[in-house]
Amino acid sequence: MELLEQIYEKAKLHPQKVAFPEALNEKMMQAAYETGKDGYIIPVLVGCAEEIKKAIAKRGYEEQVFEIVDIEEPEYKNKVIKKYVALPHTILKEKALNRRMANPLYYAMVMQAVDEVDVTFAGIDNTTGDVLLAGQMIIGLKPGISTISSIGLCDIPGFEGSEGSLLAVGDSAVCTNPNAEQLASIAISACDTVQSLLSWEPRCAMVCYSTLGSGQGELIDKVVEAVKIANEQRPDLAIDGEFQFDAAISPAIAKKKVNRESKVAGKANIVIWPDLNVGNVGVKLIQQFGHADAYGPMLQGFNKVVCDCSRSAPVTELKGNIVISAVRAAAGK
Image (cartoon, rainbow, N blue to C red; front, side, top):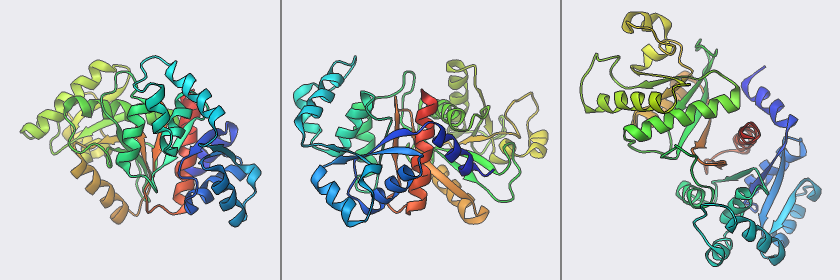
């Protein structure tokens, strides 16, 4: 069974409520409708109910597939606000929150914070910066996590890794130039994400242009320090390095380059890039020359699952990422 088939089957077992604050967007509504009608999620459209209902009718969809939350209806809004301000460690108080919730993105995230929905899915009408800012303000970060990052899942034809053709990589989208503490946080988040989504035993390699001291310089020092921090914070996880990329994923090359015991070398199923330059170029190389399908980016580090999709994503990709987000949310429970 292919990767997405496995994830879709998982989603159908425990459909999650996914909030769509960009409900009027044609691609977003179509993706929400099709994943909802097929039983993978319960789509919740957040916005002006009158406009949403008109768009549903115009596009020929069955309205009963959706739940619709009208941001202009005061009773439900006040209920959600009261539940939110009663939570510990909330930043916004009632008046400020009320103003923010005029924006459907913030409204959806407040609903998520108080467990009215399980996922917020956006990114076509809102920028990545919009989604990250709202997420940090309303949802907050997981304890022990210092930075928001992302992970992607590559299905690479012809690649024979420890998980067959699959390899998780990050961060290729969010954190520009992480320091050692942030890099450690990205690795820990990636292990938790992969474990919740795919039930893998994470084997996380932190890569750069050196394998265990073969090179020198501050770019390497950062990765070495990140491995140390990650191991101190989460000794239960197999996080190792510094490795060159080939030593991380190839058993034959690891045998030559890694002269000590390692649960990760040569059999990594997660690769953590040292910065966004490497991450962006790396994932594009995998896609262009390896002809890989790349799923994501999946945001990680938030207290709950928040998804920022690509503005150019086709409906098929949106659907895949919606279902992936739902499975992550279900596993997080």
